[in-house]
Structures are given as structure tokens and as C-alpha cells.
Image (cartoon, rainbow, N blue to C red; front, top):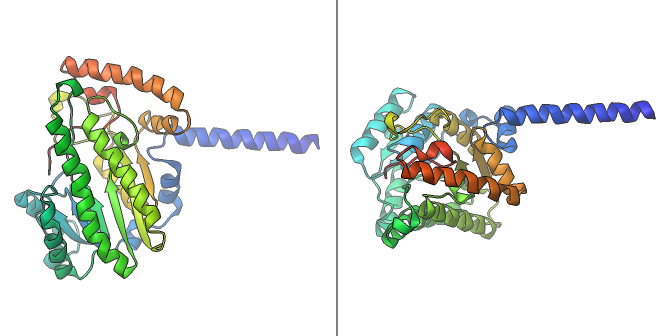
Length: 326
């Protein structure tokens, strides 16, 4: 009996050590990492699907286009800048076996909600269906609340929240008729955690979380429709000048996007994607909020001090870098 107890304790201890080591080197939540090792592969699950990407002209959206093209997905590329969309389309054709007809450049302004019905119809006219909508378009913010006009908050909510909601409704109407499809929204760690200097941006991302968590339950009669929210931490961006700070603490965009595709291929409803020590903060906020407030206040104070001193604020806190509107 004593031998069995000792063996069990050794086994539990060994298991805890292994899981601890895994977490030290983790760059995503355990569910997503497990799927990346043991789950379905994007190259298999996403091949032949029609994927609509907003904000496809730069950053995560651009990288999503390239990797999805490599998986054999047909693409609808949307953003405001047609010339940049054409550049991304050319890159997709060069890195894949897709033909010109497999990629539709569809300029779109999320603020022009009255145009979303016509844009959706144009997408359906070209491909006949939309299997996945990736809501990636939006803009960030970096300013102190007391120094920011309320008009800035209105603009952020109009673009990041209402623009996304509007387009989602148009596409989701068709998906419910078919009974299948995926809505994938690129949020941020700022959608889970309050981020100083990004109060409006964080509010818009929190709104998206509340919205999509709510409609996920409303769609319980459509079990084959996936509502998925992606929460990246700091991600490297070409829009951040090398003079503004070191990006080594940020995850390469290619790795972030690969994990997103793994989550899509395996039907994961929420994805946490970040390198350590940022990933740890996700778990602390989820399971130890009192400690989380203490850490957030200390890190947030440093971020504000850096901002006022003209130093890269992102190096002292956990949020996406400032980006331009696609």
C-alpha cells in the first residue's frame, strides 16, 4: 500500500513538473497548443473553403491571406486600400497554387455600414458561398483618457465594434440558411484585460467579446456554425518603427497566424495567443483577479510613465502595437 501511494505521488509530481515546463515555453493556451500537436491540420480542414478577411492589407490580415492561400483556401480580401489588396493578392498567387479567379479583391470600409449588404452579395456572386468570415479590420489607440476627445471613442466603437457587427450580420444570415460556417474575430488581450492608454480600443474589444459570447448561445440551434474569438498579445508589426522600440518581446506574426489557423481547423471558441510572460497574465486574470489587479497596476503605471517620456509603451505592458487602419 505504501509503495502504491509513493508511486502515485511521484507520478503526480512528475506530471506537474512536465506541465510547468510546458507552460514556461508556451505561446498559447493549453487547448490551442494541444490542438497544434494532436488536432486536425489547417492544410486539411481549410483547403477549398471560401474565406473572407477584413483588414487584409497589412499585419495579421495580410499574413492570414498568405497562409490561407498556402492551405488552398479561396480568398476574399477586403480593406480600404485597393492597391495594397492587389499587392497582397499577387503575393498569395506567388506562394500558392491558387488561380486569379480564386482570390477576389473586394474593397470595403467598415464605417460604411450601408454598403455591407452589397459587398456581401458581391462576394456570394463570385464564389456562391462564404465558409469563414475573419473579422480582422479595425484600428488601435494610444492616448490618455483625459487628453482624448470623446469623438475618438465614438470613432473606435463605430469601426471596431459596429462595423464588425454590421458585416457579421450580413454574412451570418446566409450561414444560418446553410446551417454551417465560421465567424472568427481577431480581438486582443485588451478585450480581456483593461489596458491603460488604450481605453477606447479596449472598450471596443470588450464589446466584441460580449457580443459574440451572446450570439454564440443564440445560435445553439446551429451547432455547425462556429463563433470564435482570438486574443493575441503583442505581435510584431511592420508599422512600428525600429526607432520606437525593440520588438523582440513580441510574437512573430507568422507564428500568431499559424496558431489562429490551427484554432479554426479544430473549432476552438476562444484562443489566447502570446509569448511569456504575457501569457501568464491571461491565466492570472482568469483565475486570480486580485493578484492580476496588483500586477496590472504596477505594469500599467510603468507603461504610462514610458508613454509620457516618449519611450515605446508596449515594451512595458501587454497589448497590440499601434497600427494604422487598413
